[in-house]
Length: 322
Picture 1: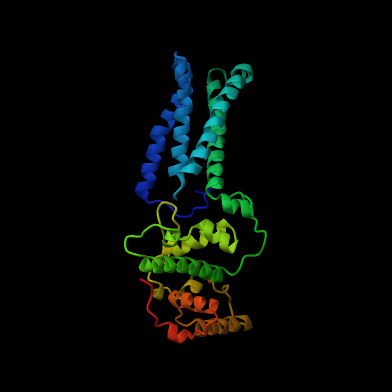
Picture 2: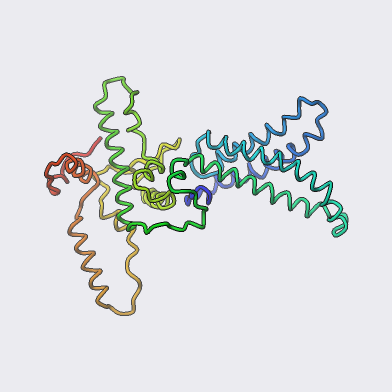
């Protein structure tokens, strides 16, 4: 989940099911892959451990992250990990027979198998993590190609990001506008015509599409989207179809989104001039934004693009898209 920049946690039941599956099936797959070349006497069975390892790693990359992963990305990451795993077994076997066994036996005696197992477990886990990183890159290839790959936990920003509240408002407006256009196309489509080039308008806005539009990086978009989703303002669709509004657009107010990402002022022991100025700015923003909702914002933006004058107070009473 850290590799995938996912901050949402699974439910307790889902965590237990995932842990039980990995704890029970993981060792079986690994030991079968290691023992099959020794146990098999028929040459045609030599490919079995490769297939077993590949299948296990593909499923791991597909279902372990707490988000929907495309099969194509999971397959590429799993096959890369499986190839490195099989190559690692050969290289590690040579290392054991030529160097490690003699060295560790002289130091640890009959317990020499323990450090050997620890080293192999470390190498194996590095291969699994490399496959997960590869799966992430393939899944978000367009965004990674644009901004470059930044390791989790070492996200040095190349530029200052906009104010979080304003960024969240723009992301929310993009998601709402994409959904509203899809709803309009569905209403105007001929009866029975569910295909066509505009069909994708009805699908949610993906993280990659948002990053392509605003170019602020995957990490800030995922963080903001998670907060909006926890607040119930957006909903993540299954199958990597992106986000759609979680409430009717006329019920999602701009002031609410801005307030969610306003950390407020620092705690001060006394009132000062800055505190008074910040209060005045908050009051001014409240008067300016008022009860402006995202349905109104969509109509205002479309009117602006068409060069038409727009009156905010009148637009608030326009009917929302179905």
